[in-house]
Length: 303
Image 1 (tube, rainbow, N blue to C red):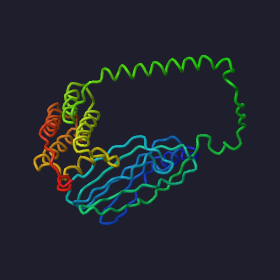
Image 2 (cartoon, one colour; image 1 turned 180 degrees about the horizontal axis):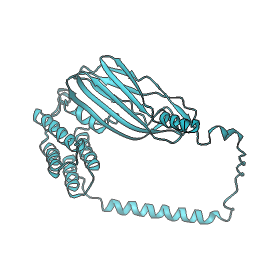
Image 3 (cartoon, helix red, strand yellow; image 1 turned 90 degrees about the vertical axis):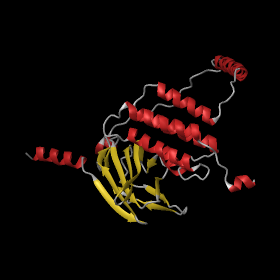
Image 4 (cartoon, rainbow, N blue to C red; image 1 turned 180 degrees about the vertical axis):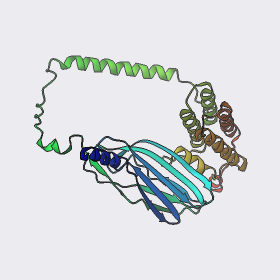
């Protein structure tokens, strides 16, 4: 009976979730980690829910890991209106092979208001309990020493490598020269975007790939057309920010907003979205790209 009880207790501990809440700069943040007791290599789910006032933009710090925990998968649902404010949600899958880690930390949210002011919210660390696969027996294991290095090639054996490298180099030069001779005229950003949208319409893809490619096409078009580089933002954060770009006409900003709404209806549909939702999002993207007019700011006109 004691043995069965021990198994039940161990099973319960592996599924415990830890939730922390904090409020800073008028932004409420709730972080949930599940489970908090794992074996190295197990998957940990991290969910961050934030509620911010209107005109506040939120973004996670651009990291591929939080301390010893590496991000293996991530999704987000950002800037959703509600009665209490704008809701921002990030969900991630993490793992770690560091059995010495005792907490999940270094999670930071960066906020920016409409006046350009910024700040950082440091999310409280979450205690973690991690065990290695070997457990407490690792130190007592009789591990064999790894054998020293062994030379792989003799002096004579290097000649084929030299000859092969020379042949590859010559082949590469010939390929580059022939490629230059066949270079086609480059399309304008608008032409490239419209061609990419046509190809996407012809391809058979899953909803996640469709949404990602569609948003990336619109982002690449805006970056190329307006000569903008924004590597610190996700595609959706970039597109939301561009709704306020003074170099876009009012109609174009409205068209971009319509596209974002149509694309979100595809990505965040509770059920499998209908074909007409896909077509609607494509039509909005095509209309935005086709009809965009580049405006010049006063500083650009003076230059």
